[in-house]
Image (tube, helix red, strand yellow):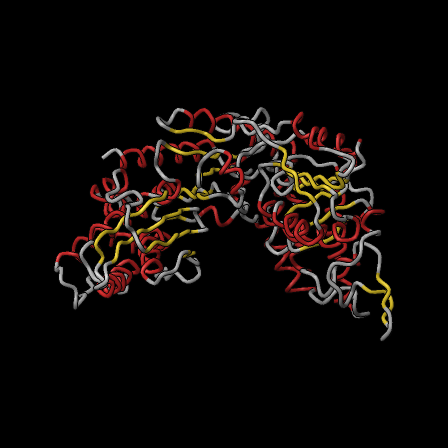
Length: 163
Length: 424
């Protein structure tokens, strides 16, 4: 019982959950979206500062949620800073495949950061907990909405792949 | 039935708080023999839905295998048997809550539909702009949203009776909200999120003094305590079958006969009419007026079997057993370091809502799940009361007739694992 749980709740996840990085509303953010999971009431706002070249200069978030959703949001902001919006989308695709168990070790091409996927691998334990996948992906869905210029990003649990 | 009756015995030992043999009761519930992740299943999500005893499953299977047919339709043999069984179930429900007449029992899909029915029929007919509806801060969404819809449609005013930090309804504040314009009070009997048993008799009396009608959401109360709608003197009382060991898809709206017969139909179609011409239709009286189309026949029969089961065990025995579990769980879980119980009302049913330090309810739920313990985590379809306590979600253990102290211990031990994991 404890093995899978220790795999899910790795120390680095607990650390990010307790002390989330890039937590707050930075000045100069020009894209933001609100993500909400009606199942559990978790709520996140993701802020991006995107320059004219489409590069994410800063990424941050605020909100409340479980250890998984806070850690995922925190790690996402760390990974995204310096990436283009296109790279961000590719990373999300790879991350999503990893969380759903569709692709245990996703190869994300066209992203100039070999470690990015590896760093996100720490969250891959969530694939053993199908109902928690949406906790890990909430921040990423919200980020995509922010990048697309949307302001509200309700995560419809029906649309979240759970396998 | 005989099995259920013989389970009522005085016993000592582990579960001695109740005058029923819990181990025997457990044998009636096949699902409780399941393992979850290699651990014995500990099912503590009864406020969401209770498991079904063999007696209910058998009654439903027997109906399908030996006498199933549509009801109130044919002159043939099976149709008569089905109709008799269906109406016998209605009669069992009527006796279960001591309704004055069997015609006061309307079968619905569940508590939610019962409330929506009252809002759509009684509400639309008898309420107008400026009239007031009073609810409480700890209602289930099913007893909030239909009234909000009515507010938006008719311009009625929705008022909310506050609760204190322990989850007690503030009766004085409630009384102040009542006015000559109050037409309806819609209040829970037992809060599904906090376990509070509301002072429903006072709530009803005070409303009636102002001429307002009262709807009671009894979804949590029906499996837990003896109900007597005549003694309560509410105007409507609603509950769901699946929370009282019956099947899903069946519930009850009880209403005073004269009020029900004053209400327009809800849905229309077959079964609920007296005469249809192409120009005009006259409707049957309650309850058939509100039961358009083919009803949930076998589910109703299953609900009747659940009523027999509860009656056989004795609601007073069940109540005593669950109160014992509540007391034990409150003490045992209260001793878990960092655990805070939300909802410490003076009168409570066997529901314990809690959080641990800053650990999110979903993390608690996932971890105890792997120990085989099923609890509900989330807002329990009662977001306003979560907001009242400043939390997005809680974990909730809710106890039923088949739960034991050992299962409370299993939960407490699983919560130790939560602490262990999060202490790293």
